[in-house]
Length: 523
Length: 104
Image 1 (cartoon, rainbow over the protein chains, first blue to last red):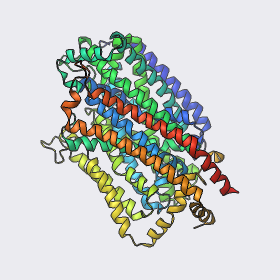
Image 2 (spheres, rainbow over the protein chains, first blue to last red):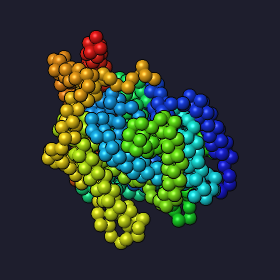
Image 3 (cartoon, rainbow over the protein chains, first blue to last red):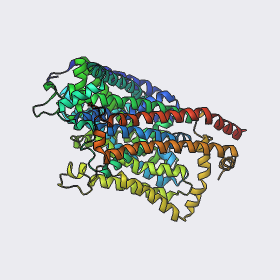
Image 4 (spheres, helix red, strand yellow):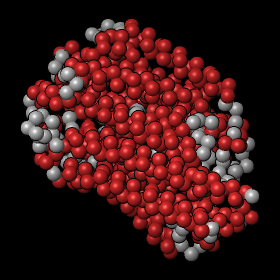
């Protein structure tokens, strides 16, 4: 650890990279059609998809960012965990099965089902790319800090390494490779986190009370046992709550996972598994964060001269792995955390690329007349472009807390994609003009308010005072999107509006029964 | 509207379809409401009652907020389980019957 190269860690890294490349090679041989590339041929089971979804969700931001936040502020970190989890039931109760019955490759398939294709898909692609970029930045930052800590590699090189790796997975293995890398990683991460949390509790005789008591003693204050400075005002609290809860139901890379299973029943099962795994994981993260307060915060070897964590604030869980399991386990956890980042980044990139190739190129630009080979070529070029952009932004945003960056992605998803999807699924009166106007208002307002908020206006751009004082824009941007959809649809008297409304009933029947859905038979 | 869509619209008038959708929607929205109340109840406690959440539970280090927070996590998993169990048991067969009748 002490500046020396950590050989066990490097061996674990190499082993994991070899494993994932083998998966990619295997998947590449099975990835021929667009169906394979975007949706893994629709042959993933509910249980497998549940693990893959959990894998997508238990990102580096969750594992490193939330444990780091609990390490720093205690209870506040739990607020994130809960918010990230509660979106899942909502997604299941209102949308998951209907999505599966209507869509094929991207959530835009569903959002534009009965509407004019060009405007709705253009909007969906734009919001997908924005959400994907914010999410990517968070993962890149986590990855860069991790690799720098382990290999002493300069941060920009570390970020670039991640970019190159994920490009390989997506380019050659498509959704099949991305899904299996995600499943392998989910199992490893759940195993590692369970071990760390178990080891921490074991030292305290499996008494959470004893752990908390020691943490309070170490910190010298009871403040960590209750909500603190993270939520400054009620508006920010509710706003963040809205973003986290409804953002889940608007994340393009998560929604895309529902098209990899054969039918609605499998979609339902996958959410149950995913919710169970993710809930378990957040319980572990809570123990890990408090464990880090007690076992990492008191150990000078893990601290830099200024009293901060070596390698950056996001590294609490990684140091804790060393504290409970030594060099070898540190290597294992680092490899798993790195794998986590790679897998999530690959899933995100795939969904960004799908938005460009399937929604923009094939459906909008070529009006549905593109051949598959050309569509896949566009997709792969987009992967390369996204990798370059993500590396650049990853370097730019080096000092941001990664859990916070992810919460911004959630705010965009909750403000643009979620209102568009929900109204197009469930409201007969909704029209093309309505969803395009509402989605655009939600997206631009969320984006604008985020730029004016403390995180970017002050922390990145260096202004003294934020124009928008709250931590999250969702409390304004999400209702604004719904309201715009409602008003614009209501006053829409165009010919297209009549087509849109007439299309509701057949769409609704298909979404409820699965009749006519792209099913297992076509795969 | 093509023939397939016409037939789908026809199905929308089928009393079995209407009953199915009404019952399943009620289940979905009821559980959604429960989750919303629990979660935003928690968020409002965070916003307006920080001292309450920070208060020691039974005089120890553990605070009142810990069981409440963990309770919301467990409730989310439990509600998901309730939904999947009920839909698997009650609705899947009805949907299959409707879909079969549609093809015939």
